[in-house]
Image (tube, rainbow, N blue to C red; front, side):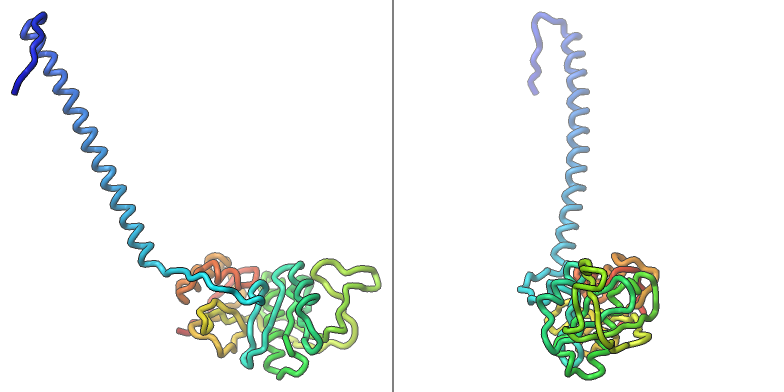
Length: 256
């Protein structure tokens, strides 16, 4: 190995110089080795995340049906139940999608979904009770922790946006005439997957779902129960949360 010696310096000075230089190089080598070690750790973490992502379910983007812009369900006989998720949707559901022969359902409590049973005028009692469960569950009764609530239904011509005191506000309706009552309607919903793999919600007796669970008002936060149900169904938790009413929950039944 060749060593450069400066002629203007003594041999001892050159030895000291190279000794100090060697110490600096060793320090740099240790720094490089440490950096390499940290880099390897980061690479292993990235690779581990990559494996997890590959193992995760692939979310398929599909074309949605028009009614999926609102709250929705189907009775066991296949009748569509459509309901608003907020005051604006309540108005749209009634103004644009309620026709002659449909029935309007609502919980007997201030604050709830305008629920429409399509073709409800000629529907069986089971279909009407199904719609009553939806109306009762998607009302403030769930958030208050009630186990049941009264619900009622009327026909289209009994609804109006005008009352004796003036115009009825967003999401509300003035109702005239006789109502058909559904007292002590249970607040109990089945949440599951339909044949298309969509996350769906319905009354407890919904026989058209595959894998499903049953929920009632409870103490578990909506986000937490959404994650739990998503894991059970193998579905995206955000889709589960989107289908649930406002409030807290308890899971009381699981059907694989």
